[in-house]
Image (cartoon, rainbow, N blue to C red; front, side, top):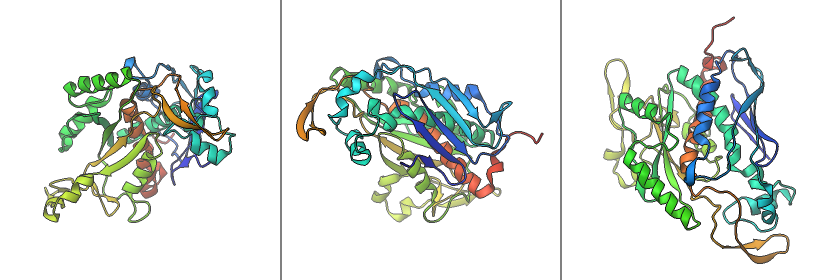
Length: 371
């Protein structure tokens, strides 16, 4: 099992949903990056469930640094973040040891690990592990902010309800990102939020679930970051985003809609104001030839409906090798798209930090003065 992402700045995940703890080890960090614990707490709070549109499992997500931090700054050695699990109810998952839940990793985990996997709450495959990903990503998101790079994610659509897109201009785009910072249901149009929540609640009352699309924008990325082939910016972001549970698609810029345009419509014409070169449109999503062009990076992430639903479903008893019917128990989200938004932002921060360290060196992320 490979649990490490990155080339220069790497993140390794560990732990299981119902184990004693989960966490992440960040390696390759520069010494002297300022640690803002309140900022990390705030980002973790955006991932936590709340109200009737989320699971009843409630974790405090209190984190501790086991290594790599001293007097409020990174030391340059491997940084280990630990988050303890407290609100587990493992008895809800006894049937999962033999009845594979449809569209979960139960069957594939059994194929790969021969029945030795921890199936409680999805084990290492669980969305619970994303708390560690958010903690690690929030640390790097703050370091990027201190360098003038902002990352924001909102719910572009949920069910049949759509939010407005990010605004194109950098000034308006920054306002959009700032407005999303403290939203536990991140949308740019207040009216869309209530309609989306109503669809989630309607699905929950039927024992069902809904999915959605997230839109992410990155402002302030310098041009020239990335590689032209296998480590393209799109490729590296997509690689990390597809590691997030429930992700089923990623598109950049105009995405699949660009296939319905002619070249004269799709091409982003270049202009200059005498100081910088910019494009009049951003159909490429801020990336050409796998390399950033200095425009905002824009991409969308498809989040499938939560696989854990309370309707009866056909499955297989993987121990007996017989067809069976599953009636799921436990505490599950009727939608996770709102909780996944901060996870996507965090993973984006991890990816961009790695790419920036590759180009400029690890010390580029340092925020403190030499002591």
